[in-house]
Image (cartoon, rainbow, N blue to C red):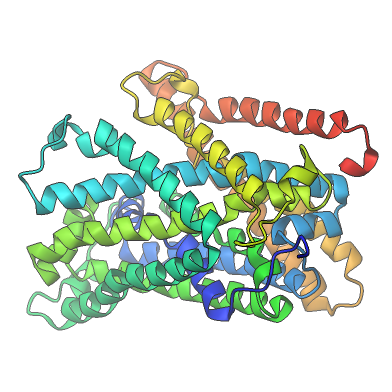
Length: 480
């Protein structure tokens, strides 16, 4: 049997992967954060969701055009290699495999475990945790840690042994996670308009208290909620008619995501007054509209939503080292490019992917959950800061696409890539502002120093240097 992945996914699965990877836990929290950032200005929040969605759709449009021209085994790396060069493609792939994918995976694993425990303890009060729920047992207790490890192993097992089941699970969790979002979007809006209180209309008329630059802060929040769509490009070698279906999947999935976020945000505002939403979040709106029982079930839907995102990320991780090895790059290319004759999966790559996720989960636990923060003021959020780099990596790709795509028209060759460059620069600054400037200013007021971006950049430099040493050790210019 040839050492190649076979075509096993269709357009519907690809769209579900795009939606399922992006629509995770963030949408359930960002509505509250955006209301806080805008001082309760509902209209300004809507504008923020639209701007954040526009940024995503512009970048998606640029990559969708690339998807019609390049098809190998890892869309993002393919584009970097074909447009900028083999060496650049290698470092993009190395970064994605060692930092970007596993960093987000480790955080989503913990979130999944957390909300499973929240659902269980709220539904069955008799369940006791070693650390009481009131003291954060669902987040930092040993039960959460053990459940997180189980989720990592279970997700790995499904993706490594049965990719078809993993694809079906992705489709199922996508539809499941859409249930509370669509219900709130429709029912919340109707109740908010036609009920006796007409809460939604009142919230639109409410006079907000705005301080500083509320729109910018709100857009920063949406930026992280929209992140993750690029991960779906890794399946282009396993997608039927990829040059046609992947662009459709990216753009249609992106449009679905924007509509879901926007109308969910409006629906939540129909469930209760703005001040309550700012303080207590969307759970209150669900309880007011659907009753206490459904408010508890919401936690289960959030957990399922997170599990779907974990599955999509683990699908990516199992193929990470394979995407380098099949090009003759990275450590031991022959080892990691092997594909199992029975499962048609790169088993060795999957094992290494599991190990890297475990390493990042250990970092995430020690820096964010442990009683004593091992990394002190330099600890960073491994689920968000890598976004700074991924959008930075996009820019040379867009620039080279403009230079090399001489056969395309003005709109596809110039307008879309230039807009994508502007959007990427904005996303980089937004991430730096949210995780660098703002924490520094807050810490300065409190009398201490904090600059998480600094520690991230040091760690990023060390890991990328390790990638350089691996490529040099092979002693071949073609290896990079």
